Length: 54
Image 1 (cartoon, helix red, strand yellow):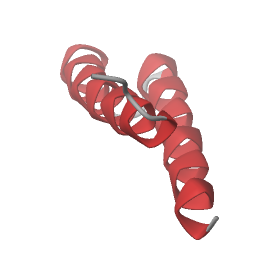
Image 2: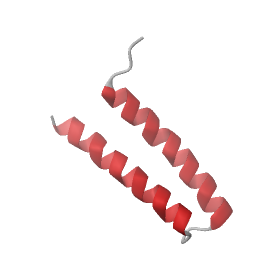
Image 3: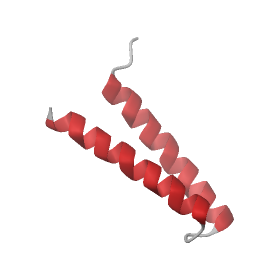
Image 4: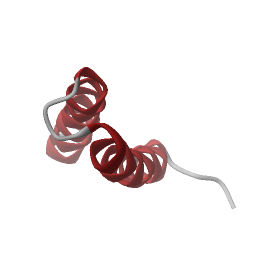
């Protein structure tokens, strides 16, 4: 089975969500690591939404 770019983005988003939860639990919601991970997740979501519009 060949994964499409959208499938790949969905998988990366879901994995990053899990990672974000773990980081937030370990370091707190306001830690640099949590914020950095959240920003990466935000960017992936924006990329995903751009693909949906095309």
